[in-house]
Image 1 (tube, rainbow, N blue to C red):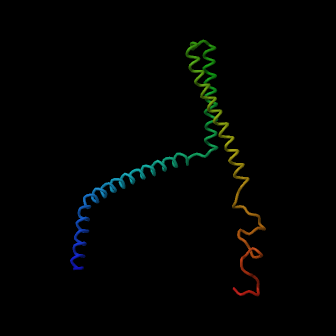
Image 2 (image 1 turned 45 degrees about the vertical axis):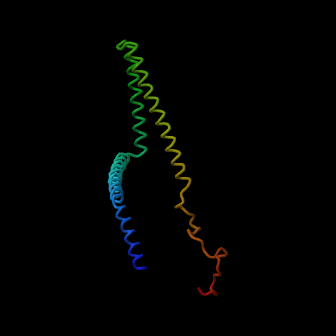
Image 3 (image 1 turned 90 degrees about the vertical axis):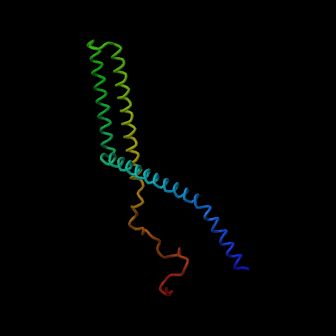
Length: 160
């Protein structure tokens, strides 16, 4: 009687499991699809990270600042040339206004960005030099030494 009950119970569970099989197959397929999508996205992100590292690794902030300052000076020279062309009556007023305003705007933006970048670099250098946890005073060990701060007795009379 108990044997028959256990066999019947086992058969019912097996039938329930078989009934769930199509759902399991469907979910496995979805999981595999999501796994492939995740791998694709991960490799795409890795490529982009490598590209950013490649592009940013070639220059340091000082180089970028120098390039930005040079570009600002170049735009200032270009706007001066446009003003000279206008003074020599080589270009009409409308063209002068369009070109001159655009080049001056670009020049001022570049100068502003260069000034801000310079300020940030100075601030960063000040922060780095004012706090360096790796530098400890020569008299101070990097770990606590004996004395009253340990929770157990120390000394030559106490065996450890």
